[in-house]
Length: 416
Image (cartoon, rainbow, N blue to C red; front, side):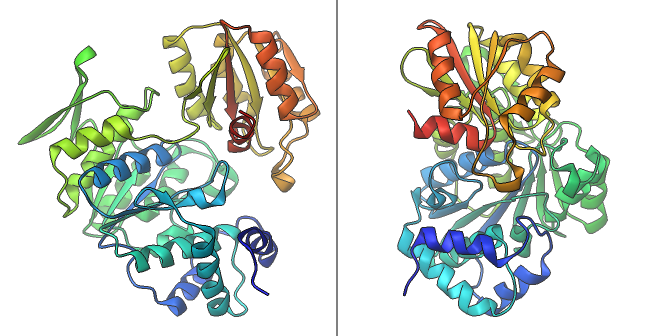
């Protein structure tokens, strides 16, 4: 009997004993058995601590505005697994994903694959069959040992490097940067979007002969106020509208996407770059939901993301109550402390669909109280209850900020 997509996803969580098992040997062997060919005529791989999903969205929107056939693989999803694989702006349907999983299952034999590895291989199969001009692949965790790294990128982007997933990637920016730099390839361009990337990233680029294109150095961004902004490099510049995505970091993400497209052999005219900057959207990144009180959703789930969220809150002051939850392995204090000056009260809820990474609300409340001893904190038995309580306490002129884990934002989207 054929499995449904939901049955396949449940099955994949049982095939490998661990949720995360970094390494390329297993997934690489199954990929060689499948032999699907290149996922696209050109391939962009996007890594980094924050900004990956937004940078993918800018790349996708710009390339599609140029009339190119584009595929994008991202993770995690918010509401439907199908969101992870897009071809020409449309999510993959259940039948296509199931057919890909059946091919993978037939090829893997006794090789155990993780849930993420199944998904990566499925995206690569569907992209190879689709005849894409550009395949955009988002790294799941780290870079060097992430399943996406079985593909040699024509251009790699590293958005930012900061502290997250230290159990897997190392204790500091230098060690984390070394892992993320594993997606770079000899003789190929790599866009380094940060003004001051870790020296480990630069050493890797120079050691293998990757062509580093550095933000704030090889290309520049000029703020032009109400007129928008300018992207420029020697011999070329373009005036651009303000990004449709609101966070302060989005201009840097759009700038990195432009640098990557200019490094590829693809016809992307200026008007397509402008349209992509203006039209790119990605759920859960300072996403506003209609109604009163205002509801703003953001997947800030590490300290760097929280600092960027705090910067936006400071620039957009309004009485704010927060709905917050995070996974057990996250730096709770590092996430809530930057946001706290802009929040009047905290409503906390548990994450119940993340297996052992879920955090009971009592423990979450203990960690938040330890970080914010003077804050008004109210734990709830469910995220739904936290959302309802926050909406009631914010008042029609206030703001409900829902942030933290993807699971938290997904709950708010599902209940709207």
